[in-house]
Length: 251
Image (cartoon, rainbow, N blue to C red; front, side):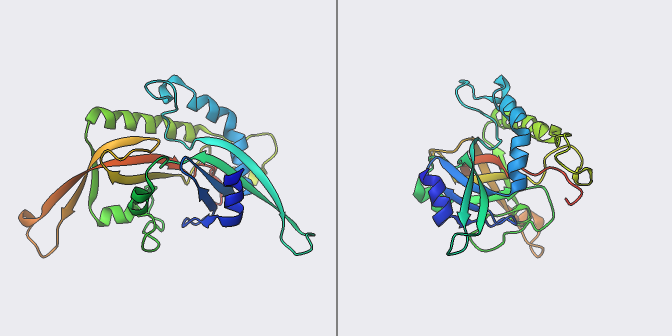
């Protein structure tokens, strides 16, 4: 209840195109949704619950999900007045999720590098100083993240493949609730891979992978043999976000 109150009264606007309102605490986050996103969540919910409870999508202990998909915990509708007399009502939708960076110390969060990666060329550069880095920023900086343990990297890749397979298999319900003109190909789209880089042995994060953060320092005016590569041990905190968008003709 306190987190829902916080997003309504003190929520921060996302840097993404959606302009969603968000609020965080140590373990959870709440985010505003459009009515379309709320409908999408209800449409995929049964399959989503089945997916995250499959044995291969749970942690080694089986106690918690190992999936990289958002950990949806609840959805809520808020109806509030937008005029002093209270005559004009507006309905807002919110979803509560586990925080990808849960339990990371505040002082580390403040300086953490974040990457929002889509594998897309459409407006994929940092929008302003201090916001998330994106695909072209990763390429421009010539950054590469190599897993410390190849087996752990391979396991993460397999989990990512299973999660993306789930997203691609989702269909809009063929129950007449969506006009045929709005129906698109099967699958959810527009999601991102969110990565936070923190010093090695930093606690917290839902999904963790120890990596070597490699950078190539080069220049067109410097001979290739003089380029240098530097690597720094880091821990990558990883999650898939923004999954509530079906393929549609508009997209």
